[in-house]
Length: 176
Image (tube, rainbow, N blue to C red; front, side, top):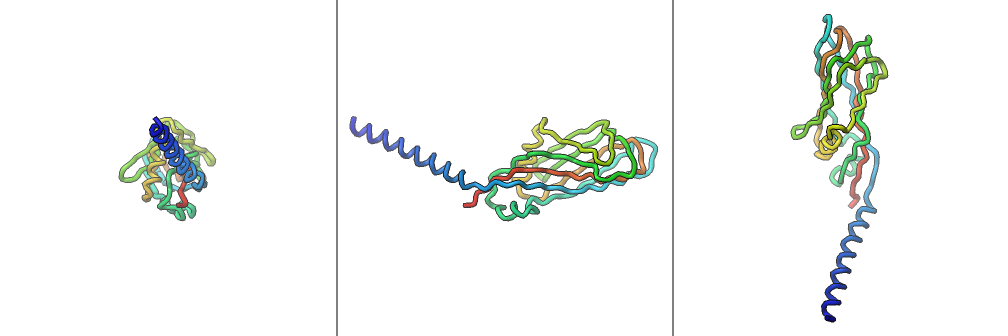
């Protein structure tokens, strides 16, 4: 009976020790914001209506100085917001149908947009309704250069616009 008490006390203390170490390690974690952005310049040729376009660019997760500093120690990327903002446009048009995709060789997140008037300052908020944010988090955690693509059809041709894609994240890294 006495040995059973010692055994239980030992198991209890071991459990406290391991949970305490995990909490101590988590207390040392470094958390910081990292924002990734990229401009995509779209030039749609002259045509009467519903003109297709497709443009892409790449983003390197290590381009953020803090991410670069802790590159091999990153535990997670938590997406705070993903947006696309029209920063310039030659004339107002409507995005009849469109898809914005963020992908690497292993993962793909995409959002469908329909009948969106495009003017300077239009902000497209890409929500997490389809689990896209989790996929983008994993893309960032893969630590590989990834692609952002915008494609679709606009209501009329002979238009140029720039869309700034912005991915805001909260990063957790271990300094150990």
